[in-house]
Image 1 (cartoon, one colour):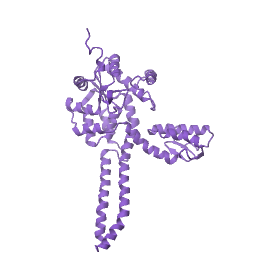
Image 2 (tube, rainbow, N blue to C red):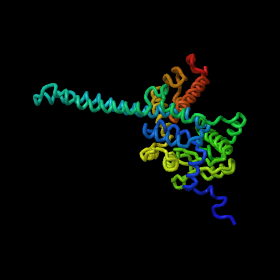
Image 3 (tube, rainbow, N blue to C red):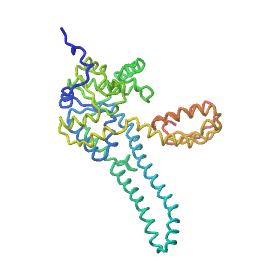
Image 4 (spheres, rainbow, N blue to C red):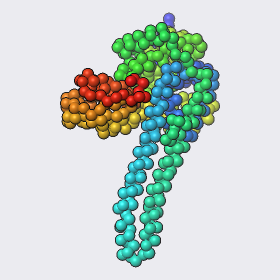
Length: 391
């Protein structure tokens, strides 16, 4: 008679032995957000993350879809973190200017009242301003050391390290016929809420997660090794099993599908757990501080919200609120719309979706749609920029 575990083992969270086997002898697949964490981590923790990935050796494998998403989101992550440094530096700079403006006459008045030499007042004021200047300089040094300075997209040592580490370990895209079939299946899963992929609804490519999963299962079937998938995004309800809000591992549906489709066991770990097991099982040089930092980083989806902030500020500066009846010049991405009369109702149709913009690619699509809709209303359009590939 079958035991309680037989035929139902996929409903049980992965135990320590299953995890140990997966990380020491399995095929290890990293989600795009794990690779992008190389930009999010501080330099020391980044080195630890790369140590852990390097310790996997030839068993490391990156699906083509993961590499694609890494490249698509890399600029946004750099912009998000670079923007955070810029915002902090500008805030302190503004405060420094305000302090100097307000404090300078007060110090001068104090010096006169107590009959101190003028240079004493300059020294007092200088010490205050020098402290703020030192804070700005330290932030600039931290930004540059983080590897996300102003020229990070052109000179990117983080990317160079990842490129060497992943050389020969990135899979090929699906053949055209296979991708077409996979996209059809992805659409079905989104519609019927079958994991993985139904969480991608509303994304620019709702088939993305299923393409990742299909490519991974194909490779796992060929290698016949236990499959370990590492992600830091524990908000993925179509990947992660979280009864009562507690992350236990992969969804049982995915564990069962991996066994059925590829004949392998499937284990899912968060980046924090991966770093811990890489240290204990693979003897990777990973500090406790790095493991803690992985736990404290905001969800990867925060990057979209941080990137959305400057985009929305630009939109608000260029696209009036629905209370106004005239749209001013819109300039973002490659797409341009000249000043044209628009009613408040028409403007609201354009404004509301603009507030949900999550990334530059989505913004460009929105503005292209905006241009087409304005053209349909026979409003005047400016000449296309010569370098616009869509011209």
